[in-house]
Image (cartoon, rainbow, N blue to C red; front, side, top):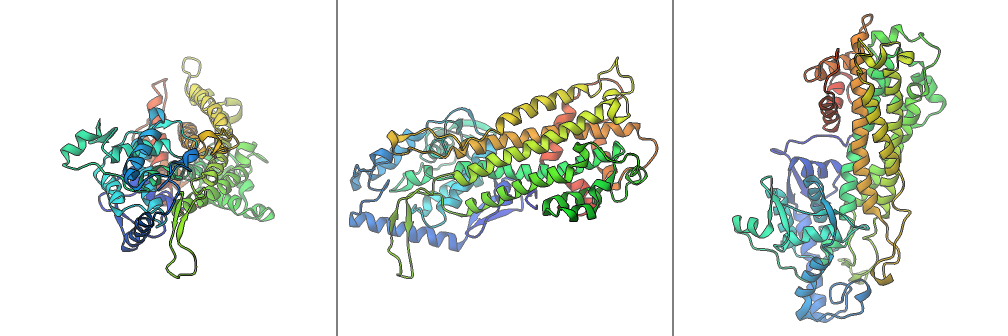
Length: 519
């Protein structure tokens, strides 16, 4: 579980041409790391393009290169109309609608475009990829509405518009007509050549990109949940017996063991945990079953991460340009359906369920913290309840967020609505699964932030024993921005601050500075 590094954009560069992981995508999408191409990357792009140009000269019939698209695949396009065909596919397919994607999401998609088309199976010119790379490195981000995709085409179409000088882009923090920005930078629009319009839109780039951002955050949040759960256990006089290594060996799921080990490590020097180990025979399930539930979720998220990283390193194009330098296999344009997003779609639907399970346990722990009959502390963790509501209402926020997460846990990929005159009589809906996962990851962070706020505030009522060093260090960091609440105050800003600490990895970093790397 190492996909959570935050990169310094001033020094970090990501070179394409070898294996890429999620942390590389995050560093480009969020931290503006510069993208470079290796010699290997350039060579395979040039060789693939040479075949496309050779086959066009030979007059081969190739889907989307010398024919129309989808149900129009039987319509042969002349060599003279090739440029118009590639431009038209961008214009006609740019039909996503609604709220635009975030800048980091579009940057992630552009990164996936480079990774996809740079595998050597797409047959595009290196010049096209250099333009996308230049846009990323200069901070030129196409405006792309985020709704209306079944797994490919539409969102990518809007990104393609910006490459050919149309549509809008974000530049220097503002939205401009693409044409104006290109004028300022003295750049000419790209003129698309054979295969390039299709290669831009026909791939798993948008679902893969959104999935990568979501799974990065979910993995980060799932480890953070171990920390917040340990804080809750400690302050509510929970027992570490449920986390005993011998107990884990009796049901040796690896992830369950890792979670239990994390909690033991965090609380290893806790005077509170040591003194209260026999306070009660066993705790409520929301505390006692942390290894089991967090472990099960971690397994699902780990598998999803593996799938997303595999997709990130595979081709998602259709058709592919098969070249064989050994001479053993026939070289040709092969049409199949590598643009199908079932792998990442199913993984993200599963990840949404896993994130919701972590969230539902967090909400239950928080409920116990603020309920006097369970926590043995004042109602809603405020010294004068009644006059003050204390932390009563953030749990309502958790309940609302959790309800939304349950809706997001309904799988997208089980649906299929035929498109393209029946030529695409099945569609994966992988894009919507990935889009849901992005929302679910954010809501999970907020739910954990609210539990963290309660666990932090609860410590004002601890006057007996010292907390673990890692927990104390985290509370010291939180106290720089959030005071102990003694009278009702405006809370929403505190929740936002703690959510940001979770999102950017600060909670993990503070604790791991004491405990070492958590699993």
